[in-house]
Image 1 (cartoon, rainbow, N blue to C red):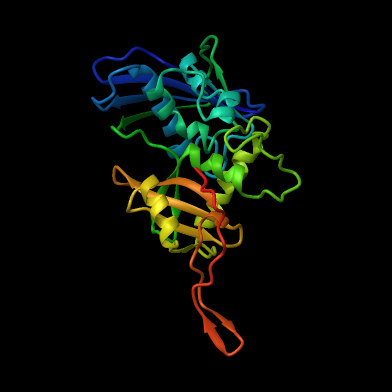
Image 2: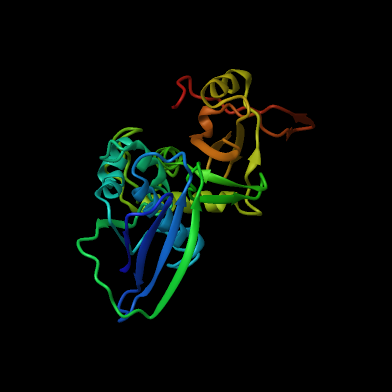
Length: 296
């Protein structure tokens, strides 16, 4: 297992210094460095914790310390603050989509670790130990008012899209239900019995449908269902249908960025299908009968 260890010192003004070391499995010497993180003034509480999360995000998402295409499997992340670990307790996240911390701002900033890197082992570092490094790097980052998350580029929309925890949970609970290797969720909200690996599978599903050449397409919903989802996610929401997996991704714009709000099975969507040839006639608006009860 590869290990990323971080420790954050008290900062001055708006800056905090996070020291880090990355050891690949079996390596004698770690890669090391320090990151100066400057926080937006909107962060009032637990600024050192937010700075540490910003440093981890930089190392995983920008520096790609573990490789560009890896998720959280076989990675251990040792952090300075117990609040980070509490926010990422897998049992709590699986059962209710909430960690075991009352610090909602910390949980929000840790979302990238609870989605793309869900499979990573999160632990609190007991004691920092200086080691003779293989390399040493310095970096400086700025953490904006909207904390960066993990995104995927959607070829159909031509933009990066943020993947939310809720959307991943709904993908896991609602799609691939016929896969014999996947346990059935206890309820639509309680995923306690679902192995960690399915979060990696869910991320891979989003990667696959968002890439160029996939069968993803924009669709319209019948008025009843369109009205329902407009009330829930806003009038500017877009509905992206992947017929191969029968999934509909609902995307909305939040603070200028595209966000995956949720994933539903197309049996709930009443999609207006493309015209089809029936005998000598072209029949339009072939609609799948949706269930009477709406999902959440």
